[in-house]
Image (tube, rainbow, N blue to C red):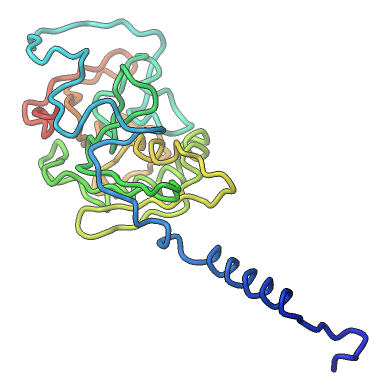
Length: 263
């Protein structure tokens, strides 16, 4: 029972303020979907503003699409290697010993070398994120395929996220640690939701797009965090065709690369 000395009496101004507080509080706690009507599927994304290249661009300005292809090159490397997985703590990665870019693990988005903080669809066909950057959603290209001819799936993307956070190098666990969930949307879509923050990091959708995608089926009977020289099934333009452990490995252009006609 409330005594007279502790009873709170609402006059009209106080009642109005209380109603406004309740209403605002309700809106603040409403699902994020209320603020996501502005998310539109696009060919690319920028941290601020719009990407330099439009949806129908044919190639990056610094690329010569008519450059000759073929030949061979030998590159020396310092050190050794005992794994083809550069995303774990244990082992000496081929990637580290070589010092070159990755040739067979692909990502959802790819960056251009003449922009800062812009990325374009690679494995994905579209990317979308709302103004508040609370999530990012990708739809995979229908023709995106692994080197064994099977399609890259939403399940592969979700597997990659869950595996990197559970068994990946601590750097990558932290780098993608702001992603709190990965959800399949439709047949080929994946949505990443980010942890809520007072000021959302606008780079998070781009960071999510930098995640390497692994084939779930290939890793089904292997330990992700254990070094291996088994050559993984890949989706990139090159494949490893010869390995001399600790001495050399050879890349070869994949003639059946699914993305050979992309910009």
